[in-house]
Image (tube, rainbow, N blue to C red; front, top):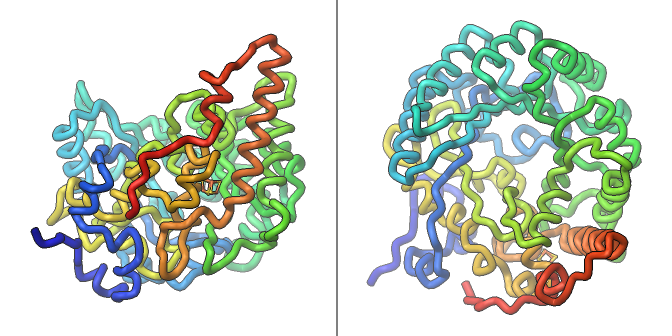
Amino acid sequence: MAKMHMQTPQLLSIGTKRRDEWPLSLSSDDFERLEWQPVAIREFILKINSRCNIKCDYCYLYELSDDSWKSQPVFMSEEVARQAASRIAQHAEIHQLESVRIYLHGGEPLQMKPHRLRKILSVLSAASRSDFEVRISVQTNGILLSDEVIDLLAEFEVGIGISLDGDAMGNDRHRRDRRGDGTYQRVVESVTRLREGPHSQLFSGFLATVDVRNDPVACYEALIAHHPPVVDFLQPHHNWDNAPPLLEPTRHVYGDWLIAVFDRWFGAARVETRVRKFEQMMKVMLGVASASESVGLSPAASVVIQTNGSYELLDTLKSAYKGAALTGLNIFDNDLDRVLHHPMVVAGQLGANGLCSTCRECSMMRICGGGHLPHRYKSGSGFLNPSVYCGDLAALILHIQSRLLESCKEAGIDFTSHTLQGRLRNPRVGALQP
Ligand code: SF4
């Protein structure tokens, strides 16, 4: 039987070299051989605005070679939102999903004027039915979060996640506006407005990008001063072709940074916030499935819908190479099951069979899961490599493991080979070579 490759115009435009790389090189025969079990898409990132009001220097959308945003309409139209809602509802019905989450994203989503935003929110909310719930969140840089906007978001029960990298010095290292001025003060004013107003329950937490030059504990303490329910720390988006700043082969500067935050968080006398990365790693150590695409082996199930209605893959893939997030599919011509069969989506759902041999033989594999997909990229082998943060992830996992075991011992819990320690030993995977 002939192999079926997904060769859309966009995939063709990224060149043969990339198409020969893993996972774009996978065919439908390979999906079967690798025992792919399709998992329905439950997270939809809707780009309602393709531009941004600030200019963070590490931004993987606007500061790298991928300038596909330039050809996108500035705002998502009501027509595109309606068709997106219809595709999402169709997908939910086919796969009998009880709920999905829609993240409003950009650029900066709150650059959309409130009257337009109201229309988009009305259209998306209308997709909910008695047996199917659409939950909406927005990820914003916070600068345009006025009382009027907060009231509007409250009307549609939209959760509000805010990007902030720590204290003023840490945040303003990278998160500056077009004049070059730091954004910290304006963001903090918005966070305070949200927290102290009548809709504080909408505050869903901070997204913070790690810069190892910042003091980790000072960064964490600056964030928890605003009482976020959750903090999510992200490593900057780099890969083997484009190494992270200050990464050293013999030291784990990113791992050490996160370990310092972990010790401060784990050692607190009371729960001050939830830290997503640490919680997910601890959950996986205890045998619970991860809810994070970048921890453990749980299948990833998210898709981006651009302002013009084209389907794209994880935005962060754009940090690997120009065009890495393109699918060549769109909401008007294609249903979501078509996206589900894209090799990059399949790759995120293969568990251990979607990892390189180094990861499959690694004792951390079940917890680490090879790290965030874009961080595994290397020209030639594509995404079939350990994370460029491999040593850092291993150091963090070992540290969390030993703190957990210490705590259990102190509490008089005796773990045997069948429980935590058993889960952490080198697993033997029925490995299939991609
Ligand atoms: S620690 Fe490194 S080798 Fe092990 S699973 Fe993670 S990325 Fe792969």
